[in-house]
Figure (cartoon, one colour):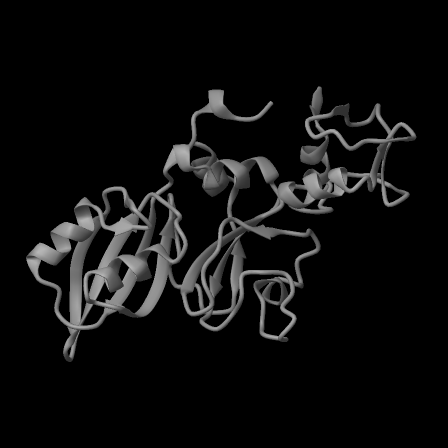
Length: 245
Protein backbone atom coordinates (compact mmCIF):
# COMPACT_ATOMS: atom_id res chain seq x y z
CA UNK A 1 0.00 0.00 0.00
CA UNK A 2 1.32 3.44 -0.92
CA UNK A 3 2.13 5.81 1.93
CA UNK A 4 3.45 9.34 2.10
CA UNK A 5 7.23 9.42 2.19
CA UNK A 6 7.46 11.47 5.39
CA UNK A 7 5.18 8.93 7.12
CA UNK A 8 7.52 6.07 6.16
CA UNK A 9 10.55 8.02 7.39
CA UNK A 10 8.80 8.56 10.72
CA UNK A 11 7.89 4.87 10.93
CA UNK A 12 11.55 4.05 10.32
CA UNK A 13 12.36 5.98 13.47
CA UNK A 14 14.51 8.53 11.68
CA UNK A 15 12.58 11.61 12.75
CA UNK A 16 9.22 12.98 13.68
CA UNK A 17 6.85 13.67 10.79
CA UNK A 18 7.66 17.37 10.86
CA UNK A 19 11.40 16.68 10.91
CA UNK A 20 10.97 14.13 8.11
CA UNK A 21 9.29 16.79 5.99
CA UNK A 22 12.33 19.02 6.52
CA UNK A 23 14.66 16.19 5.46
CA UNK A 24 12.69 15.94 2.22
CA UNK A 25 12.63 19.70 1.60
CA UNK A 26 16.39 19.86 2.21
CA UNK A 27 17.01 17.28 -0.52
CA UNK A 28 18.43 14.67 1.83
CA UNK A 29 16.05 11.90 0.76
CA UNK A 30 16.14 9.88 -2.45
CA UNK A 31 13.65 7.32 -3.80
CA UNK A 32 14.82 4.77 -6.36
CA UNK A 33 18.00 6.75 -6.88
CA UNK A 34 16.36 10.14 -7.43
CA UNK A 35 16.36 13.01 -4.92
CA UNK A 36 12.80 13.85 -3.83
CA UNK A 37 11.86 17.29 -2.53
CA UNK A 38 8.10 17.20 -3.04
CA UNK A 39 6.07 16.73 0.14
CA UNK A 40 3.28 14.19 -0.26
CA UNK A 41 5.34 11.88 -2.48
CA UNK A 42 3.89 8.37 -2.30
CA UNK A 43 6.09 5.29 -1.81
CA UNK A 44 5.47 1.59 -1.26
CA UNK A 45 7.55 0.05 1.49
CA UNK A 46 9.31 -3.08 0.24
CA UNK A 47 9.13 -1.99 -3.39
CA UNK A 48 10.70 1.47 -3.45
CA UNK A 49 14.31 1.98 -2.40
CA UNK A 50 14.71 4.88 0.04
CA UNK A 51 17.96 6.54 1.11
CA UNK A 52 18.51 9.32 3.66
CA UNK A 53 21.87 11.09 3.43
CA UNK A 54 22.99 8.20 1.23
CA UNK A 55 22.08 5.55 3.81
CA UNK A 56 19.62 2.84 2.78
CA UNK A 57 16.55 2.50 5.00
CA UNK A 58 16.34 -1.23 5.61
CA UNK A 59 13.60 -1.68 8.17
CA UNK A 60 10.73 -0.03 9.98
CA UNK A 61 10.76 0.19 13.74
CA UNK A 62 8.00 -1.55 15.68
CA UNK A 63 5.57 1.01 17.04
CA UNK A 64 6.29 2.05 20.61
CA UNK A 65 4.21 4.35 22.82
CA UNK A 66 5.12 5.25 26.39
CA UNK A 67 3.90 7.37 29.28
CA UNK A 68 6.56 9.49 31.00
CA UNK A 69 6.22 11.42 34.24
CA UNK A 70 8.18 14.53 33.30
CA UNK A 71 9.74 16.24 36.31
CA UNK A 72 9.92 20.00 36.73
CA UNK A 73 12.92 21.77 35.20
CA UNK A 74 13.19 19.29 32.32
CA UNK A 75 12.79 20.42 28.70
CA UNK A 76 10.50 18.64 26.26
CA UNK A 77 13.13 18.43 23.54
CA UNK A 78 15.99 16.27 22.30
CA UNK A 79 18.81 18.73 22.99
CA UNK A 80 19.36 21.97 24.88
CA UNK A 81 22.33 24.26 24.03
CA UNK A 82 22.41 25.36 27.68
CA UNK A 83 22.87 21.78 28.86
CA UNK A 84 19.63 21.54 30.81
CA UNK A 85 18.04 18.09 31.28
CA UNK A 86 15.74 16.91 28.47
CA UNK A 87 13.02 14.31 28.11
CA UNK A 88 15.15 12.48 25.54
CA UNK A 89 17.72 11.78 28.24
CA UNK A 90 15.01 10.25 30.44
CA UNK A 91 14.06 7.69 27.76
CA UNK A 92 17.50 6.95 26.29
CA UNK A 93 17.25 3.29 27.34
CA UNK A 94 14.46 2.78 24.78
CA UNK A 95 15.87 1.35 21.53
CA UNK A 96 13.20 2.97 19.36
CA UNK A 97 13.45 6.70 18.77
CA UNK A 98 10.31 8.17 20.34
CA UNK A 99 9.04 11.74 20.13
CA UNK A 100 6.81 13.69 22.52
CA UNK A 101 3.14 14.21 21.70
CA UNK A 102 2.92 17.94 22.33
CA UNK A 103 4.89 19.61 25.08
CA UNK A 104 4.98 20.41 28.76
CA UNK A 105 6.83 23.59 29.61
CA UNK A 106 10.02 23.68 31.65
CA UNK A 107 8.32 24.18 35.02
CA UNK A 108 5.33 21.88 34.39
CA UNK A 109 5.48 18.24 35.47
CA UNK A 110 3.39 15.17 34.85
CA UNK A 111 2.13 12.95 32.07
CA UNK A 112 3.80 13.16 28.67
CA UNK A 113 3.06 10.68 25.89
CA UNK A 114 5.98 9.76 23.63
CA UNK A 115 5.75 7.56 20.54
CA UNK A 116 7.34 6.68 17.21
CA UNK A 117 3.86 6.22 15.73
CA UNK A 118 3.65 9.34 13.58
CA UNK A 119 -0.01 8.85 12.67
CA UNK A 120 -1.06 8.50 16.30
CA UNK A 121 0.96 11.54 17.33
CA UNK A 122 -0.41 13.70 14.54
CA UNK A 123 -4.02 12.97 15.32
CA UNK A 124 -3.66 13.28 19.09
CA UNK A 125 -2.34 16.80 18.57
CA UNK A 126 -4.78 17.90 15.86
CA UNK A 127 -7.07 20.69 17.16
CA UNK A 128 -10.16 19.27 15.43
CA UNK A 129 -10.21 16.22 17.72
CA UNK A 130 -9.97 18.20 20.97
CA UNK A 131 -8.34 15.47 23.06
CA UNK A 132 -8.99 16.36 26.75
CA UNK A 133 -5.98 17.01 28.96
CA UNK A 134 -6.39 17.26 32.73
CA UNK A 135 -4.12 19.18 35.09
CA UNK A 136 -3.81 19.87 38.80
CA UNK A 137 -2.91 23.52 39.33
CA UNK A 138 -1.91 25.19 42.58
CA UNK A 139 -2.91 28.83 42.18
CA UNK A 140 -2.25 31.85 44.32
CA UNK A 141 -5.16 32.97 46.47
CA UNK A 142 -8.75 31.75 46.65
CA UNK A 143 -10.60 32.03 43.32
CA UNK A 144 -14.23 33.05 43.74
CA UNK A 145 -17.15 31.25 42.13
CA UNK A 146 -17.23 34.01 39.51
CA UNK A 147 -13.56 33.44 38.65
CA UNK A 148 -14.11 29.70 38.30
CA UNK A 149 -17.06 30.37 36.00
CA UNK A 150 -14.89 32.59 33.83
CA UNK A 151 -12.28 29.85 33.56
CA UNK A 152 -15.02 27.44 32.52
CA UNK A 153 -16.61 29.75 29.95
CA UNK A 154 -13.38 31.01 28.42
CA UNK A 155 -10.67 33.63 28.91
CA UNK A 156 -9.46 36.10 26.27
CA UNK A 157 -5.89 35.27 25.27
CA UNK A 158 -4.25 37.01 22.31
CA UNK A 159 -7.61 38.39 21.22
CA UNK A 160 -9.33 35.01 21.14
CA UNK A 161 -11.40 33.33 23.82
CA UNK A 162 -10.30 29.92 25.07
CA UNK A 163 -12.65 26.99 24.57
CA UNK A 164 -14.87 25.92 27.48
CA UNK A 165 -12.99 24.09 30.24
CA UNK A 166 -13.93 21.89 33.15
CA UNK A 167 -12.78 23.39 36.45
CA UNK A 168 -13.26 22.32 40.06
CA UNK A 169 -11.63 23.07 43.40
CA UNK A 170 -9.93 20.02 44.91
CA UNK A 171 -8.26 21.53 47.98
CA UNK A 172 -6.53 24.43 49.69
CA UNK A 173 -3.02 24.95 51.08
CA UNK A 174 -2.65 27.95 53.37
CA UNK A 175 -3.85 30.92 51.34
CA UNK A 176 -3.56 29.07 48.02
CA UNK A 177 -5.94 26.77 46.13
CA UNK A 178 -5.65 23.53 44.18
CA UNK A 179 -7.76 23.34 41.03
CA UNK A 180 -8.38 20.49 38.62
CA UNK A 181 -8.66 21.85 35.08
CA UNK A 182 -9.47 19.95 31.88
CA UNK A 183 -8.91 21.67 28.55
CA UNK A 184 -9.27 20.52 24.94
CA UNK A 185 -6.86 23.01 23.40
CA UNK A 186 -3.10 23.24 23.36
CA UNK A 187 -2.25 26.93 23.31
CA UNK A 188 1.13 28.11 24.54
CA UNK A 189 1.24 27.94 28.37
CA UNK A 190 -2.55 28.06 28.28
CA UNK A 191 -3.50 27.22 31.86
CA UNK A 192 -0.80 29.46 33.32
CA UNK A 193 -1.95 32.36 31.16
CA UNK A 194 -5.67 31.78 31.86
CA UNK A 195 -5.16 31.81 35.61
CA UNK A 196 -2.77 34.77 35.54
CA UNK A 197 -5.25 36.77 33.48
CA UNK A 198 -7.81 36.38 36.26
CA UNK A 199 -5.41 37.34 39.05
CA UNK A 200 -4.49 33.87 40.31
CA UNK A 201 -1.05 32.95 38.94
CA UNK A 202 -0.11 29.28 38.88
CA UNK A 203 2.43 28.24 41.50
CA UNK A 204 2.59 24.57 40.52
CA UNK A 205 1.23 22.66 37.54
CA UNK A 206 0.99 18.94 36.91
CA UNK A 207 -0.72 17.06 34.08
CA UNK A 208 -2.45 13.94 35.38
CA UNK A 209 -4.34 12.69 32.32
CA UNK A 210 -4.12 12.79 28.51
CA UNK A 211 -7.25 11.47 26.83
CA UNK A 212 -7.93 8.06 28.41
CA UNK A 213 -4.37 7.68 29.79
CA UNK A 214 -3.79 8.52 33.45
CA UNK A 215 -0.50 9.33 35.17
CA UNK A 216 -1.35 7.10 38.12
CA UNK A 217 1.50 6.34 40.51
CA UNK A 218 4.28 6.68 37.94
CA UNK A 219 7.24 8.29 39.71
CA UNK A 220 8.85 11.51 38.38
CA UNK A 221 11.52 10.78 35.79
CA UNK A 222 10.27 7.27 35.04
CA UNK A 223 8.21 5.84 32.19
CA UNK A 224 6.16 2.81 31.28
CA UNK A 225 5.08 1.23 27.99
CA UNK A 226 1.41 1.59 27.16
CA UNK A 227 -0.42 -1.68 26.76
CA UNK A 228 -1.99 -2.59 23.39
CA UNK A 229 -5.39 -1.94 25.00
CA UNK A 230 -4.32 1.57 26.06
CA UNK A 231 -3.00 2.32 22.57
CA UNK A 232 -6.31 1.22 21.08
CA UNK A 233 -8.13 3.54 23.49
CA UNK A 234 -5.93 6.42 22.30
CA UNK A 235 -6.63 5.52 18.67
CA UNK A 236 -10.36 5.59 19.35
CA UNK A 237 -10.15 9.24 20.39
CA UNK A 238 -10.27 10.27 16.73
CA UNK A 239 -12.64 9.08 14.00
CA UNK A 240 -11.28 6.38 11.71
CA UNK A 241 -12.36 8.23 8.57
CA UNK A 242 -10.01 11.10 9.47
CA UNK A 243 -6.94 8.88 9.73
CA UNK A 244 -4.29 9.53 7.12
CA UNK A 245 -4.05 6.88 4.44
